[in-house]
Image (cartoon, rainbow, N blue to C red; front, side, top):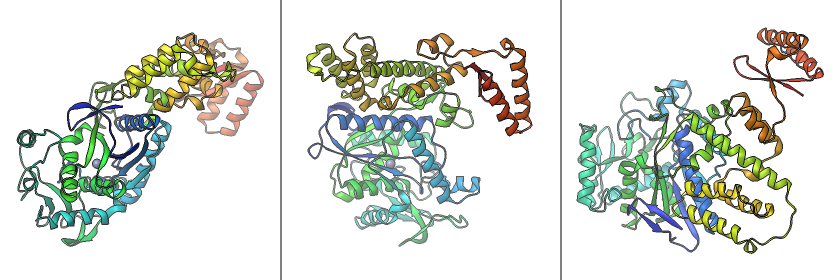
Length: 508
Ligand SMILES: [Zn+2]
């Protein structure tokens, strides 16, 4: 298996610290808002990594945090706590807000077929471990207190700060300084070096935070954002781990800080062997943001009749180290590809004869197997691996052999192909047709028999019943509406309600 390591800026042969055992830490969500498309891509690609490692025979302990305290609005050490700020906005308490969005995160993950981590750990449940770590750093003389602000890590006291950015510490420093200068001012008064960061924060006068804990520096204080990942990785995976994942925007600050504080505590033992970073997702060519109205969740995807698994397929179509530009057109193409794949798999399943075939008796199958896994095990090149899937779909190999291959591929792709049913496919086809993601021919080719009818083409009796029912729905008389629907069914017509009073009508 080969993996690109940000630390060396090269693709490396993957080697574990312990035989066949992978200790993997993934930076998890900050649960102050709905999980959006950018997050979805990141965690699908983490999932791909975990699945690929497991398929290759490794046991993987996958630890992922939930940030529910300490992440400030600026990603730096100033501004409000994201959780506290949003809780005020929603008129709820920070803990309730955190649980609500943590639930939404896992709900989204489940729909996308992302396996749950071996351990999901909350920052607020690890206050003690974080405090212990800060105290250990203080004891080593690596910290200083800014009165009324917090305890800071003095990056000038270690000689390799920023080595994730460049192994030459002077060059790393130049990069970081240029970045800080880009921000013009040093926002923290009393910070000794621009790269120093908060380990522990003190409540400001009048701030009235909900989440505070006592510490030696202040009765009302809370952990900084970066320390949580170091403390939880240390507690649950030990001093050294194999892989650490996160978005590329974490390289310069968050991950550089994690490395500095962890290695300072453990005595310079290299923290993570591999650093895996996912590139950005853009939406319609732009950075996702609420103000641009391009902030989409999994529910937005479902509402538009797309399958979450089609979205997953779309993410797999680009390499994790490439930027990806999400468009509804690209999702439409992925939905079509997914529906075709689903039909192909269901056809294979019905023609299965349960014979005891050996893959090795089929050189063509062995080749597809090898090509597919060589691609995914070469730095997770799913974009290449998927071309093998399309090749497989066009192959004339024995259907049992193809079925076995595609099921094994799906252990890594995670498209849920084993759980497909004829009914689920037909439903997807119907919805896709109603929302014009696919056309009638496409739907019929994949097995959808019913034809969608236009109101004006129907007998006048049926038109009248439908109009009456629409009126009943407008009047919120749902009993009447249901009765009329039943009457229509008796006449051989089935209605499907779409949004904005739109209807889809079919002959049963
Ligand atoms: Zn982290």
